Image 1 (cartoon, one colour):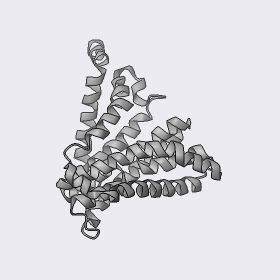
Image 2 (cartoon, one colour):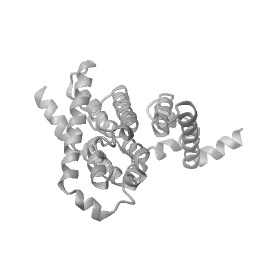
Image 3 (cartoon, helix red, strand yellow):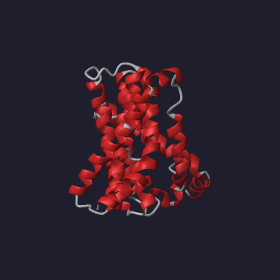
Image 4 (cartoon, one colour):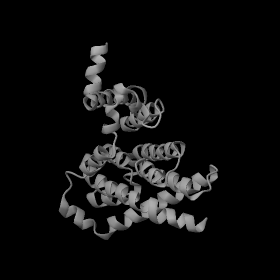
Length: 247
């Protein structure tokens, strides 16, 4: 056992990929067999990841030497690489056709998500600008929340709430996208670009569009990716300073 443990510790990143693969396989089985695809496997995997994060201290499960590779796999470098990679496969000409509609959708989507998240945070009892901003940012995406919380120096509990808010949004987007697609005419790349900008949750948009029409996935993922980047810029700066001024 000591030899096996040493091998896993020395090859932490490879073991981390193995662990994530097992989690995804388990999530896929739960989604298909127990949930009958009502909750996407991605959302279940996120929930499992959040649960594992509570097992450690500052670095979550990566505090244990056996799972030290999780710190690198879940770090900012690979996270940002994954976000950018989702934009691959989109047709540049069709993206240009979206024009200002996609840009406007981004700003409107971020503002609405932040506003709604801020209201929920306020009624949960959070009244200071830092905590309000972090939870509201989490309502944008579960990536924007932790980035904002780290920048503002809030506690890990508040960051966890922001991640949970993003996960809930992902689940809602995944479930309801195929149900309302026909009603909102979500059947072309232009609509997918605008939709991705309004919703913003990359995993939720991708899973929802995949259940609707797989050809629309790259376009929705593109603006959803920009949504995350723009949210990481606006939430800890413009939105935070605005809340600070109002409070």
